[in-house]
Amino acid sequence: MSLLLLNALVISHLHYSAILLNGIADNLILILEKQLNWGIKACFNRTKRESSKDLKIKHGILPDRYFLDFEAVAYFWK
Image: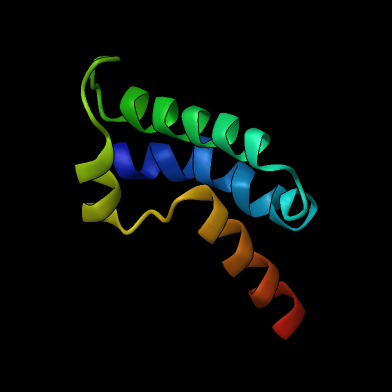
């Protein structure tokens, strides 16, 4: 249920805007990564101090920079 919530509320926004976000600066990528971590923690009922790294590994969630690059390649491949 938590993974479904994460995909619906957080990951879907990244999929939708990935092609537009591909050329943004590194400092904005860091902000986006912090927001992704917050979304993961909120969906899986983790506190602010707990790490979300294990959840990213377990569910195969890429870091934002790699996710945006992957989505851009997949978009232009189609």
